[in-house]
Image 1 (spheres, rainbow, N blue to C red):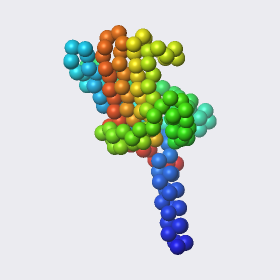
Image 2: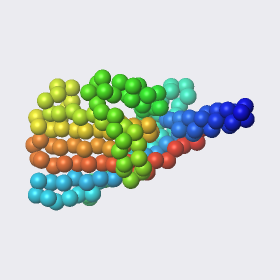
Image 3: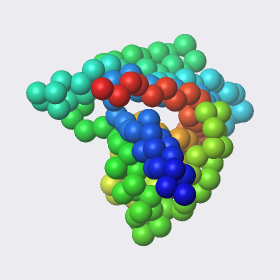
Image 4: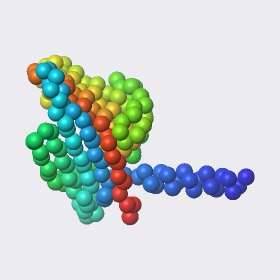
Length: 172
């Protein structure tokens, strides 16, 4: 009996340790599409990766890349706060109270428990125009985003991105 409890504890702590993020080497990739009102579809790809952390300033160096059709952008920026397992716990705990819905979602990277939150163009807190809407599925992955759908109220374009790959960095 004691041996099984000990084994269960080791497995639990090993799994929580393995999923701890952010850490150097964490990388996520998303794939998706932009669909125009005329039915044309453009492929979209994106990624984020933790390149380093400065222990004295507690800042992270993050590389972000996105490609939409022939357009491409890559930038590396220093970030003070990154999405973490603790942030996911806070989102999950308060999901429904903040107007979200807990939902299991399947994307190319796997199936995740998520908090689905929708923001419409009428909300005053965003930078989107009238008629715009965005739905995000937040989960327990580096950078948080499992899936996103955004509709541009002006152009009618619908952009969808789904998590396609998760690579966890090495814990120190």
